[in-house]
Figure 1 (spheres, rainbow, N blue to C red):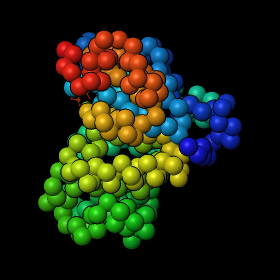
Figure 2: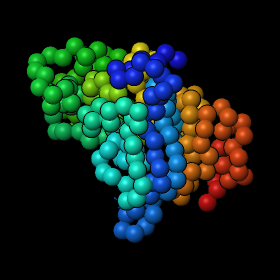
Figure 3: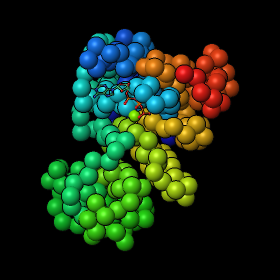
Figure 4: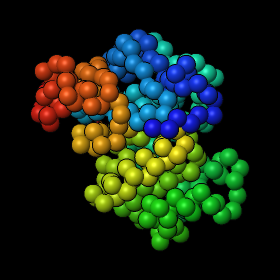
Length: 248
Ligand SMILES: Nc1ncnc2c1ncn2[C@@H]1O[C@H](COP(=O)(O)OP(=O)(O)OP(=O)(O)O)[C@@H](O)[C@H]1O
Ligand SMILES: [Mg+2]
C-alpha cells in the first residue's frame, strides 16, 4: 500500500492516526465502551465488528472527535499536529440529510467551506455512485440505499484525512456494495486516507480491511491484522463470533 500523507514524510516514525489509552465511555453511568489500549495506523483500513450494542458507533463518535471519552484519552496523530475536526468525516449509520436536492446534499460539506456553483468533485462522485440521474430530485424521495450513497458522496467530496464509516453499505444491493467498496479502496490508495469501517458483514470486514477490532459488550475481544485475527482469534468467544455464531 502506498503511504501518502500531508503531515508525515517518515511513515515509520509517525504512522499512527489514533492512539487510545484507557478509554471508557458511559451513557448515564452505563459503560458502553471500555478500550484499555488501541491504535489505528495512518493510511490503513480498519474494520470494527461486533454484535449490536457492542459500542461500535460510540467508538466512531469518539474518533470523530465529536465528544471526549468519559475517561482516558483519544489522541489523534500522536506524532504530528492533532487532527482538526474538519479533517475527520463520519458517515452516520442513519444518513443525516437536509430537505433539499440530492446534489445540494452531496455538495453540503463543500458549500459550508464556501464553494459555490457546480462542483466538479461532486459531479464526479455522483456519477461514480450512479446517482447522477437523481441529482435534482429531493433527497427524501430516494430509497434508503440511495440516501446512503448520497451521504457517502458528501463525505468523499470533502477529501477527509480520516473517513469513519458506520455500516455504509447496510442498505445496499450486492452490486452497489461492490461499487462502494471499490470506490473507497481506490480513494484510500490514491490519497492514503485512514478508514475506520464499522460493518456487520464479516466477509466485508475480511475483504476491505488490513486491521480488525472485534468488540463485545464494549470490550475488545480481538484486535490486530485482519488476516491474523481470522486465523487465530485468540479466545473461544472471538472464534465463535468470527464464525458467525451467536455469543451472547
Ligand atoms: N445516546 C445514548 N444514550 C444512552 N445510551 C446509548 C446512547 N448511544 C448508545 N447507547 C448505548 O450504548 C451501547 C452501545 O451503543 P452503540 O450505538 O455504540 O452500539 P453499536 O455497536 O453501534 O450497535 P449497532 O450494531 O446496533 O449499531 C448500547 O447499549 C446503546 O444502547
Ligand atoms: Mg451502531
